[in-house]
Amino acid sequence: MIVMGIESSCDETGVGIVRYHESGAAAGTCEMLADEVASSVDQHARFGGVVPEIASRAHLEAIVPTMRRALAAADVERPDAVAVTIGPGLAGALLVGVAAAKAYAAAWGVPFYAVNHLGGHVAVDTLEHGPMPECVALLVSGGHTHLLEVSSLADPIVELGSTVDDAAGEAFDKVARLLGLGYPGGPVLDRLAAQGDPTAIAFPRGMTGPRDARYDFSFSGLKTAVARYVEKSERTGTPLVVADVAASFQEAVADVLTLKAMRALEDRGIDTLVLGGGATANSRIRSLAEERCAAAGVTLRVPTPRRCTDNGVMIATLGAHVAASGAAPSSLGAATDPGLPV
Ligand code: KG4
Ligand code: ZN
Image (cartoon, rainbow, N blue to C red):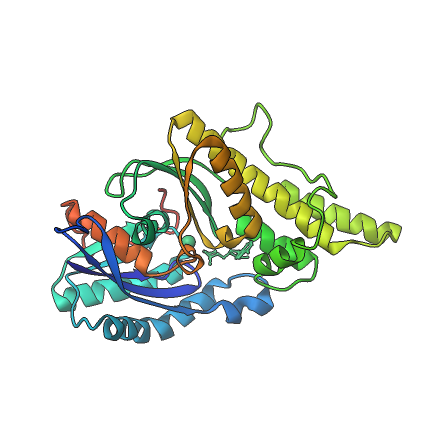
């Protein structure tokens, strides 16, 4: 079975194509045939964040050429099914991918599967690391920060917790902006942090008190603490060691993310952690997750950076698992759901 997946929930227009193996040695797994992504990230840079209207227009321009490129790369004329991100994401952006997926599924006369973007971030890991055991997934990007419990890719995913304010990647972007580092700020801040002292400034660890929700996150207090620290140094004329600010901020984010993930693994008696989302490219989030998983005897699975960010292959992979489970296809009348829960 060959499945095309379309992703347009944020600023990446992604079209991926996978072959799902129903039998043989690779039974139950997907093989990647095409992975085409067009990004509008450069168009958002001067605004310091994703501008929904610009993202929607860029999707409109990119969607058909990206689909054509993926079909050509996979040497496929017509897939056996089309899957698409139905939510969560930006309303206008989602609409473009969903309209294209419905139109092509109808024209080709193949089933249409509307899937959840967050599940896609988990599913994509199976391409590199094989079938997914029961796991806890930590998804961190510019748009989401979620702690999930996954029993199987075809079953509903349980949300254990999420951010109550900013997403982790968004906090990186906002702090980078505050420090005058440009957008997207995560990668620059990460590089700068490598030259700083992560213990230089004791920034707060949000929602880690005994009365706080066990699995939820909050990053707005941390962002405010960084802003206050910068203001104070300007006011008092104390030279600001930007690398120390970056390293201490990054340490606070990585600490809280991995602390809550380890807590969930221990509470639920699960021994596999999957990371996903663009911010898992962060060197400290990765190294701290590695350290803490090794200490707890937990297997850590992290997709290659290109597949941690939004792409179409993750949607094709999830769509293939849903289709293979025998679930009924979605209605071509299915509406986008920008606030879709897990
Ligand atoms: O998944 P993604 O490409 O797009 C969505 O937000 O959905 O993630 C992009 C986010 C941005 O906020 C970016 O600053 C952050 O991931 N990011 C990083 C790093 N690389 C990307 N954050 C911290 N450290 C990094 N190395
Ligand atoms: Zn995403």
